[in-house]
Length: 172
Image 1: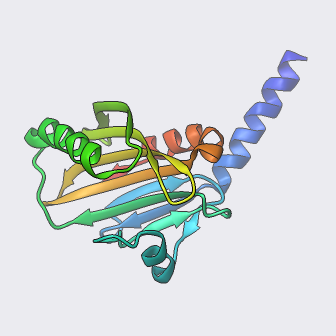
Image 2: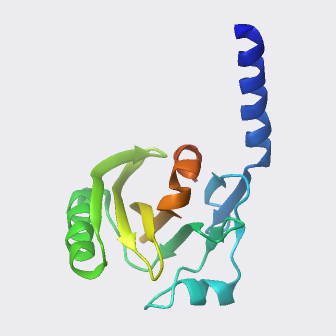
C-alpha cells in the first residue's frame, strides 16, 4: 500500500512538472518555471491590473486572474553589497504606501547563486487581500524583480508551486 501511494505521488509530481512552463526575460538570460496554469498576461490587462505608476513589462496570471507572477528588469543598478539596505528600504516604503501592509518575512535569500532581498507580506486590493512574495536582486547593471502573488483565498493552493518556481530561477 505504501509503495502504491508513493508511486501515485511521484507520478503526480512528474505530471505537474511537465505542465510547468519556462519563461524568460533579457533575451533568455533570466529564466524560471511558472506553476502549471500560469500564462502571459497581455499588455492591456497588465495596465488594468497594475494602474499605478510604472507597470511591469512582463506578467503571468492563472485562469482565475486572482494569482499572478511579475518579473521585470528595471533601470537602476543594484550591487550585491546593497541588498540589505534595499530590503530594509522596501519594508519601510511598503509600510507607508501599501494599504493593509502586514509583513510576514523580511530576509536575505540565496537564489541562483546570489543574494536577493525577500519580503513576504499581505496587502489590500480593491476587493481582496493578497499574499506577496517579493524578490529583488541586481542583474547586469539593473534591478531584477519577481513578485509571486495570490489572493488569500488562492495562496495555499499556490504556495508550494511558487516556492518551486523560485528555486527554478536561473541567471546566465
